[in-house]
Length: 332
Image 1: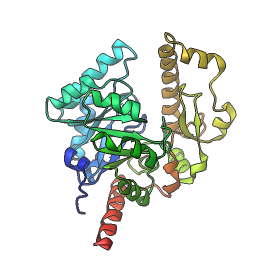
Image 2: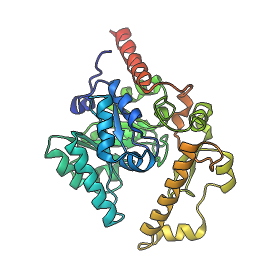
Image 3: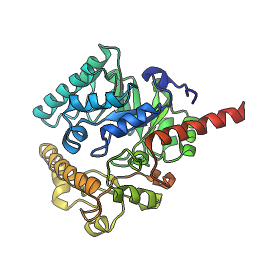
């Protein structure tokens, strides 16, 4: 397999500009390692590592290192929801740096402290954004690139389609990663044609052999089509993309009146978001790892349209890379 050279692969030191995005609770060490070993890059989600899969963080990182010596990344959610959480995330970032991780993906807050720590050892930080306003704020903190979360993403999706979001951010002078809607090699090629320096996939990697998500979840992704993905704010307080199941249809997709009022209140919104987050984390873990019958709540993006089978993660990376190679050969 030849190396696909983009500003992202050059900066991170990988062969294929393809990220296995951080997912709670689906980011297990074996999935991360398999993606990186094949030439892409898997991202560690520390809460998933510790609380969903039962690995102390340093031990989990060393387990990945036993499986591959290729680069891996780390997800640092920098929202200042509480002093306890922020202190814990700072400790986790320090451990990740001590264990040799040099690529970090930040989200939901001001990434300055992560940037300072990572840049001090020659690492790279990309930040999740959904629109130009958040991109400009992230660049004020000297991030090196942007993960551009579009309207086709799973979980907390953006509002712009991939092409529109690229046009909105293309002049900012940093590499852009397309996050959302990438389920097939054709989608991968389209994103690179638009001008993205790489892609981030989540849904496609849930339906992989190494992911420890329940078979019911993987089968639901394989069976689903783009029109089966709906947005609900009943789970986390903000719109989340999920597969429409009988449970989702039963509870509806809109938060109640009181919850909406609390989420808009300047002092109560953080408390309400914390309540939602704790509840959704519990539901996600049970549904994703235990299977159908546990309040079917399965996050997924519109990329389900391109997912037709459960495959090894390495085979996914290789198949996507081969499509780019074949296209390049045909055009030369």
